[in-house]
Image (cartoon, rainbow, N blue to C red):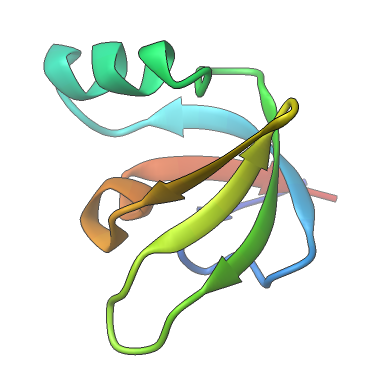
Length: 77
C-alpha cells in the first residue's frame, strides 16, 4: 500500500483515508462532510494551479480546497 496526499492522487482513482494531518477543527469539519479515517473516497477531478479537488464520498460529491485536500493522506493499492 502506498500513502500519498489526496492532492497527488490521480483523477478517477479510489483510495482509503489513512490519516488527517490537521487539528481538531479540521477533523470536525471533514467529519461533518463524511470524510474520516478509514472511509473510501474517489477523486473525480482537480484543477490546475492549486485549485479545488473534487471527490466522491458515498453518494455525495464534495469540492475541497487545495490546502485542506493536502492534509488528507490516503492509501492506494
